[in-house]
Length: 299
Image (cartoon, rainbow, N blue to C red; front, side, top):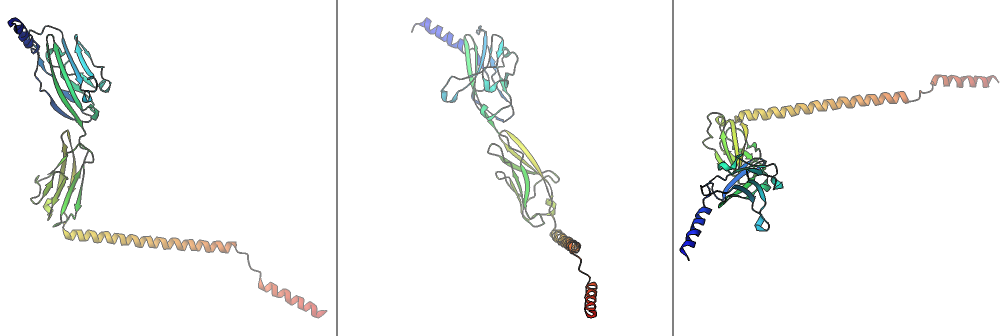
């Protein structure tokens, strides 16, 4: 190969690489649904880059079956962001003037369908550089539910449950104590996957406010639980009181029922007396018969 041609190619190769993108290529960004994401693309220019600056963000199409759609463009000192309908009004440059070296973009109000690979291309003739950013949009944990199972009395086995019904897996659960002494009971066993805190042989000192934190890669949620460990004697007293209350209620209901029934029977009896026809006066009937007999005898 001619030495002059080799030199020219070498110079052109150096010039083509004069634009330098400083951001990490194929960086993974994991964000929550409804949140925002910044796709970084910082660059530097060289004196050899003499053409107009052009920045173009595209989204890689599925399996390369179609041309990568353009998301947003900066060219000739103007920003154009109405190319891609699914991200209309939800994407913009971080910098109002990307020529200063920041071509990063921000995506707003993320949805799971925004997940994908985005490509930043910076071109200033004769230089051109590209990087890709991978975005994953996932659901953060929903607000978990805190409740207990087991006998909440001294010596019993108490289990604190924490569960988020929604959220991208894996979700880790961590129980903490929100009131003094701020440390979990020495006998406690934590299951971070199932969200259970086992407290065998519970003591009165284990009573207090407990705090559960549900966490995945894109967010956290929490709930609180008030735990009261009751002495066994108090448990018996409470049980007896509950039984007594039910018995009293049963007696009151029975008395009310009987009173209502008696009142109903009396009303029905009065109704029958008012509707019945009055009987004939027996004395008058007998008197009439006697007169008839006397008249017959006189004849």
